[in-house]
Image (cartoon, rainbow, N blue to C red; front, side, top):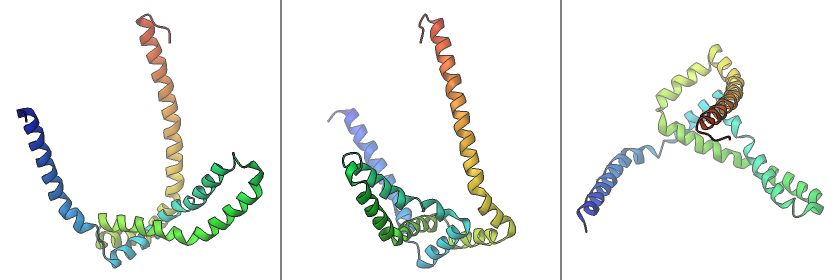
Length: 170
């Protein structure tokens, strides 16, 4: 091995050891208690965060149906019937994503911290926040999209102007 190869191997070994050392505390956090998960679910419910996952199953079912439809247009009625049945059958599975998200919260926040946040969401300001936040986020995302389009147009104009200075019409 060359000296540079040895240096790379030593650096990779050091990085691996650091990763393993850092993973130890993380691994301990990966198994939250049932109580912490329940607290996280309460928080997510109060916050209204779980409702954002409501469209997942219908969206997956619809997407799957639409993969079959172009090559089987004569089966439109039957595919729709199957989609309704599969959507209905999978409704209970929505709890799986709620459990997974609750585990993430339980790993990132202590039970005491989540209880403090729950207390906030039970106040009038907290209830208003959970009610109004989705609309504020939606409006913010729309504004960010509009800003992004304006910025994109500006960048395109500037690129064209700079390239024109260099003798290129884009």
